[in-house]
Amino acid sequence: MTLVQAAPPPSTAAADAVPAAPRGRRRGGLRNLGWVLFFLLPSAVPLLLFTFVPMVGSLWVSLHRWNLISSPKWVGLANYERLLKDPQTLKVFLHTVAYIAGYLPLVYVGGLALAVALNQRMRGRSFFRAAIFLPVVTSWVVVALLWQWLLNPANGLVNHVLAALHLPTPGWWTDPDWAIPSVILASAWKDLGFVMVILLAGLQAIPSDLYEAATVDGASGWQRFRRITLPLLSPSTFFVVVISLINGFQVFDQVFVMTGGGPEQSSQVVVGQIYNLTFRYGRAGDASALSWLLFVVILVITAIQLRVQRRWVTNA
Image 1 (cartoon, one colour):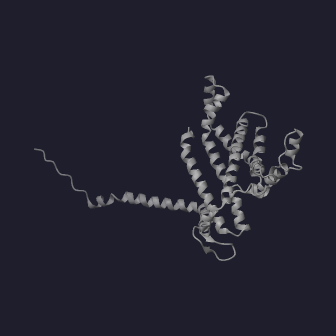
Image 2: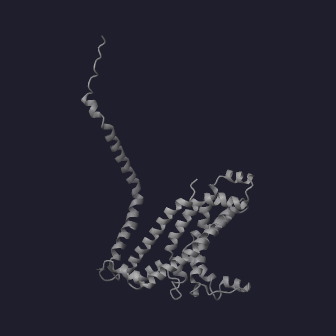
Image 3: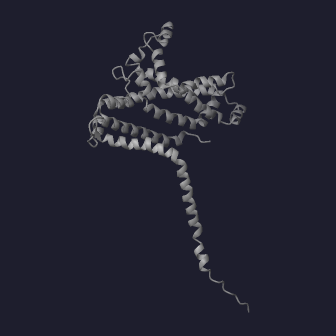
């Protein structure tokens, strides 16, 4: 008869040692988190001091009536209510949207054409890339003054060329109907290089094998561009569209220098109106409220873009 000896019960020390591993992992995770926070401090502190703190301060000011001199007076949401009823608020938003509607297609199509052209093998390619990118790093004031001179109705170079070609010579930034197009031309010229670089990087990331296989299958140049280039360039396109829209809603420098919001407030944009409310009319509360309305508009449009991009952006 075989006797089966029962296994001895686990010792208390062994049982107590089981939770030690998770506790050690938690301690190690907290230590790693501490190091992560330590290395993030150089970036987190300026972000907190110069972004989040001013945002909270702006929200606080938007709930007060303040002329930058006397003590702020609490008014609650009255500033928002007054802005939403003011016809000028709608006008400056419409002017901003009109600017984006002209600027975004122009800068994207132009940047794409330049990227495709400078992605080919050609002599002087590096020089042309650098020359086209140069306006990107140029001050907005310099660019705006340059285009204000080029588009001068009386002695500007553009109107001299148009007159030599027997074409109409608009009043450009002195004409209410041409003020926004003048700003669009200056903005697109400056930002073409940035869009070109982003799209050029996207083009260079597309495998050449795909083009070779399509060529063997008899695809034409347009078919390769439509079926390969545009779909695989969609992540870069999405980035350009998002950044351009955000920057478009915040347009100010070129408008301020070229037109000052005129003539007859025909080119006044949202950020220009915020500037005027603060420093010309002494209505800092209204200006802060308008800033938050602009923030909400940008946030909503960006969220919609992030939602819709799943349908057309190809991540391959």
